[in-house]
Length: 617
Image 1: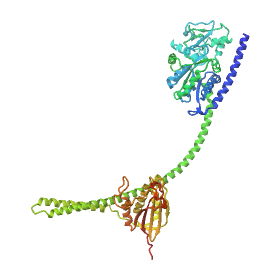
Image 2 (image 1 turned 30 degrees about the vertical axis):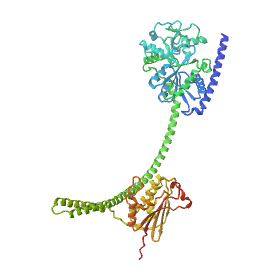
Image 3 (image 1 turned 90 degrees about the vertical axis):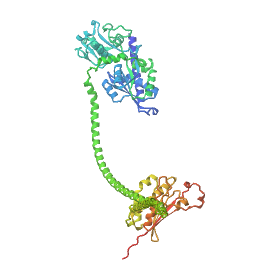
Image 4 (image 1 turned 135 degrees about the vertical axis):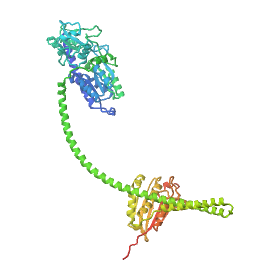
């Protein structure tokens, strides 16, 4: 026995040394996450169910997770949680994997879609689905024949949520119509460690202790309990290595949450399956190995029997554990509230400034919109008038021909052909009516001009502001060379001319790789000269000759009236409008075949208007 005690002490010291070394390894692994595995998230959290000291639970599973991290390169963070904390963390999607008993694993599978990956095979077990149960332990002098006799006895258990102790036996009691919490009047939960319950039995402070299977056998093997002093009540006949008073269930299960990546879960599962009973991780974790999931329908049946888990929660311990966090949260909330007040003040201040800026911007936008609205309205009227003039010109000639031919027919009729004569006279009446209608249409579409004193450079600047979206969309910044020149003109109509010419220039430069637009205004010999020079491809000689003809256009959807309108407005103001291609600045470039590669191509539109003569007193 002395040699055995020395061996046990040596083994205990060796286990403690392994715990320290592997815990340090785990800390290093969790602190230093490899860059190649950080793409999905910094680490994966494993929640381990803890009834006893969290340090003991952490030290039991930390080496296993450290081994998995070292083998797969996947960073794992171990957190130990009570049953209530575990359910809360799962409900809030704060865990990626779970290490828990079979009952809570099945419960979470049902409510939260947890996927069962592995089952633990504890030391000394051969079948993982029959690895843990409950044992009713009493002094050797006490015997009972059924569970109902427990009502009159002093029964103790470690914790109401302990699966391998109280919960399994609670299912057995409920199956026989016994409510363990109300019918067992002398039931007490004395807490951990479990060896304490055996001491209470030996001290005759309790009659029966509800403990997991193999606790008594391990205590006897270690010499903590004399042989023959205690025994298991209502022991079932099984081939299990330890005596049990209940049905056997699977031990610990490793599961993943629904949101966890399946490839990560696969890698971790393979790493855990590679652990053997002789590995240090298995020695410290007190298991042989991990196996694939086993049948757990009897666990689900136990969960159904327990119904709403009628267990008493240790609110005092929960409050004690939560108090530091509550204080820290209160401090954080207070600081957050102060920050909120500061941010709120800044937001109000900046919102007011932004509101003023938005009002100013809206006023500017509204004025610009009204200006554009009036501009487009005037442009439609001008185009309608010019279109009416063109249509009238084209229709008057065939109508006049019809009238002359009809009159010729009338001259050739004799007096006996009265019906034909009446018909032809009606034809002439309809022709006259059509000509009168066209004449009224032309008169209706004519827009009277309103002449005012206008400073042309200011008018050009306002037009450029109006067309700013067009220039931005085309990626063109006009180069301005403007002098101060005063003329007498209709500002709205002259703006129509400028907009039409500038848009034509932008359309001409659209396919060019380099765009350059120059606008010049100068006074030359009592004439105001406006020159619009673009870097487009220019026009052919034939196109230049017919530039100011109505219904002549090179645009796919154009009407061919824009330049006609411009010519009409300019001439109405006593001016002239001309167009010619830019002369090549380098004669050697004239051989270039592709005009898009020639930066000297383009069109020059020149508009001249009479300068306003100052009145002499």
